[in-house]
Image (cartoon, rainbow, N blue to C red; front, top):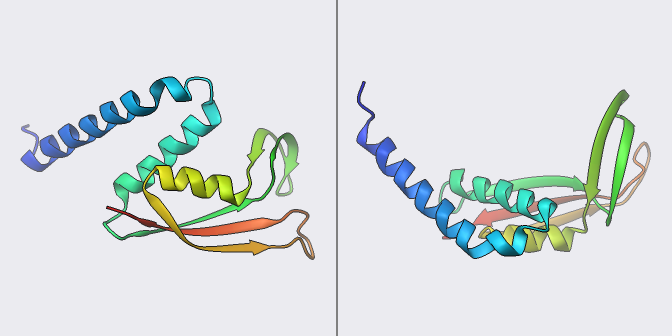
Length: 124
């Protein structure tokens, strides 16, 4: 079965962006796996959003790494990196997602940590 022409063009476009991205950030990000992973995820959001599309991102706020053994009422074994919203906004901007709104929710009833929601818009 022959691949539709639009898929061929899409694959070529994606490969071009991936190569350019690797050239720009490869060496600088080699020693920063968290930053590299977040930029990769944000770049994928940028790739899949329509022009002018929005992303709503919610996260716990902090500046630390913790290993959790219990979360959301269940035993787990997971490493959690918490970042300040300003750092997340910087990484979103590097992926050409401009933060247009930010909400910080203080800890309250049933919530131990500060929570942030960021709305970002895909820039061209």
